[in-house]
Amino acid sequence: HNINKSSETDSKSEAQISSSNKLRKEKRNMGRAPCCDKANVKKGPWSPEEDAKLKAYIEQHGTGGNWIALPQKIGLKRCGKSCRLRWLNYLRPNIKHGGFTEDEENIICSLYLSIGSRWSIIAAQLPGRTDNDIKNYWNTRLK
Image (cartoon, rainbow, N blue to C red; front, side, top):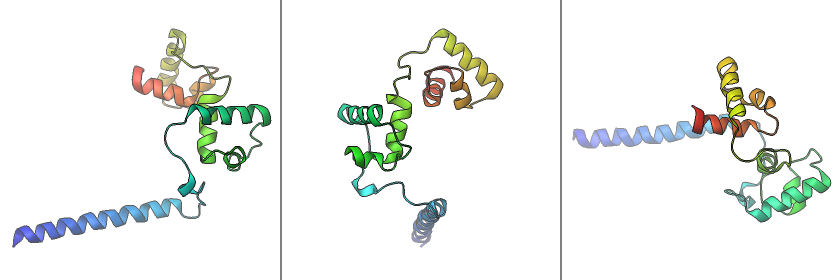
């Protein structure tokens, strides 16, 4: 008898937890319009063709400040937020790709000791490096 009761209790608590998680998520998103039509949006890694489309369009026309409308204008099945992040963190021409120099590493360590994980402030001291790159470098190589 006790075995059945405990498994009933366990399944109820799992259902309650699931319900609680749904409510928490709904509360977080209350009053916020969805950023895009999730059903028609591609997720996952970007293809070289998608990168080329986004890069060519922005280099020719700029962003116009409207990232939400941009993917539709250029025929990308991506969310505007995803396009914005792709441009800012990977495709902008002034971004440095590749390994960090010893000087950059020293600056990151020194600033981290004085201001902590304020990656955008640290990135402002390293031209061509994004806050995202610095955070990832710190978490994978320096931590």
